[in-house]
Length: 263
Image (tube, rainbow, N blue to C red; front, side, top):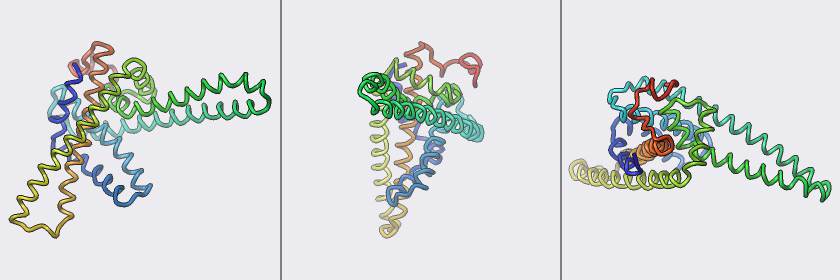
């Protein structure tokens, strides 16, 4: 496996079922663009991670050869998956609060006297770096953690170790694969947008839809859905490649009972 496998996301992402699943996400994104509010943002974030787990699970089963994996099973899996990810977020918040309390305590102590400042400053520096390190782990989990849940059914604590493992051992690949995912998502969405635009212009010659701009917007949302689909699937494939590079094991080609006791 190599980075070239990431470009398979264009093919896996072009699925009506997946585009339909991601259509509400595109609609929420468009609503945020028109009128930002925190309720819509909260719903968008929740559905973003839910749909990413769902799309990743469907694609992973497809990569393994199960082209008829039930959508009902995928939905149940995704509900459990997002609860695990929320559990990871809760653990992260608790750790972040604990580190912040230590940092503020050290700051308070360091203000008492210069001698205490010299003593506490190294610890203050260490815990500040640890806080930033933790935040980086949270960012990495958006791609690695979700993919780990979707492929190996990892729990909340496993997400922490897997995210930091990839960050520590394969930072250069992690960054390059994410850039490829983002660029591919933008390019794929733009191409589909052009195709849909030409189709609408063709149909408009017969239906005269110039005054019905809402239909244009609703149609173009499929292009945005395709972008999300490419992004999610590229992250999944990127994770499979990262696991292969780290462990020399292609988990997508192993039987479930062999590669993991968790699935």
